[in-house]
Length: 343
Image (cartoon, rainbow, N blue to C red; front, side, top):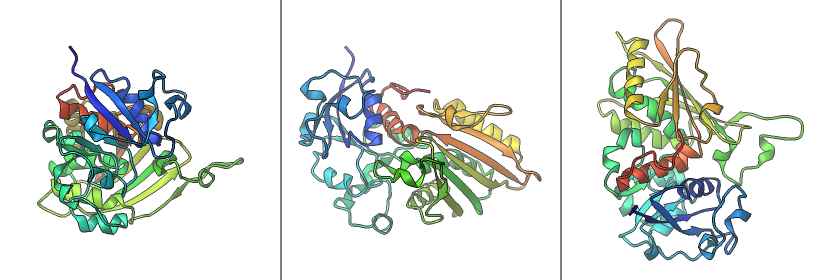
């Protein structure tokens, strides 16, 4: 008999919550028993998103009264500053997979500075594993609580950590230029900023002050302990709904060539189901990753061979959020990590 894990999703009506429902409803080892919302209680899911095809019975209605004793795992697709308040009331027997920023950072003072507030359970920060499977796969296999990385950090850390660990690039003067579909800004984003009746817009925001910088810095320095990693970060919003591209400029260390980077990325792709390293005439674009859990990597030459230019692509709602959460869940439960996920 197939093992079934009883699951709740809180924040079911947000962009990420909807993606979680779509993925987990097709998971052979999951039984979703609670769809949480504060804004639309007693509403059928199909009235929120017509593409969700679930039976019309009371268990598939949205609900605001969550009883944590009824489930084994809860996915929190909630805003930062909200998740930790729910976690405070949960049973210690419950596995928590949090998609907000509330448990990603190791240092409570860093959290307070970047997320404008207090934290109700700072003592639980060290009980959450940073859920980047390509780096932390082995420690995810023990059913711990999991903090799912942010979308920008996911696109940046997957290519950079292996290059830095293998001493292929200089840890100083890394430039990260990232572009995201507007779904990354959430449902409250003012669409008129990026689209109007006549044209499409494009702009950068929070250059070198984005909240994800502390997360990227923490994980790079955690994995590359011998030296501090220094980088610039410039994020942008595109008029696309979904997709993310980070273009990363790195100085190669002395004696290192493009072929060394190719070998490193080939090795990473061979060991990880959701990393695709493409070369030559294959195109790296949003269509190649939308609605998948993949991270697509491609590298480009620099005119004097002193640098390497990396393009890293993910779907910000899938690999940058819901898909990665399910990938972590699969690993933590001893399932095949690709269950219910599209390549």
